[in-house]
Amino acid sequence: MFSLLRCAAGCGRTALSGSHLCAAHTADPDKEARRIGAYILERKEIKDVNASGLSFVNVDFSHRIFYGCNFMRASFSLCLFTGAELSMCFFDFGKLISCDFSGGYLQFLSFAGASIHNCTFENSELIHLNYGGARIGDCTFNGSDLYNSRFINAEISSSDFIDCNLKKTFFINAKRSNISFKSSNTAEAVFETEEQ
Image 1 (cartoon, helix red, strand yellow):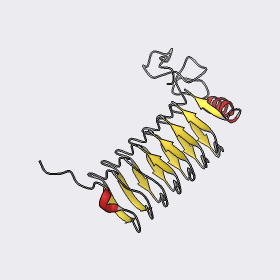
Image 2 (cartoon, helix red, strand yellow; image 1 turned 135 degrees about the horizontal axis):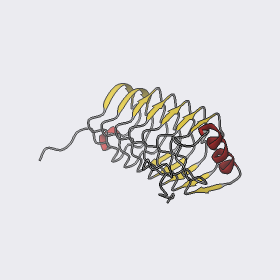
Image 3 (cartoon, rainbow, N blue to C red; image 1 turned 60 degrees about the vertical axis):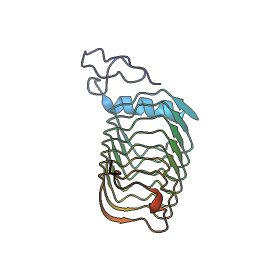
């Protein structure tokens, strides 16, 4: 997993990969995002990167393999993750706007508290993902396997889950509006807690 080296400024946040400072204390966060983005683009496999709090715009991360990376509180806009494999990565409290994760293999990721808008996760394996407390709008999950994923306390609007595997997918206390579950196995999803 990514290093838990603390920021040299003493704020308690973790330092960015290849730096002694976090995104909030680095002199030029955009430069750090470009540096870490270039590092990622030079490799097929990316392991243990800490890019927490950085912003990435219009970067193509497609067909790469990510493992154990920290993207908490990071922002991704117009970024491509098509056909990418991501395992054990954290996007908690981040922002994803107009990003494409289609055809991906994502497992054991956390998007807790994230803001996710106009993104596609179509035709993907979305296994054991945590979208707890996320705000999701105008997104498509069509044709995806969401086995054992969690949308607990999420706010989901104007999004499609058409022809999805929802077995053991939890939507407990999720606020849902204008959602389509057409041709999905909603009977195997969990929408309410069982009474004791």
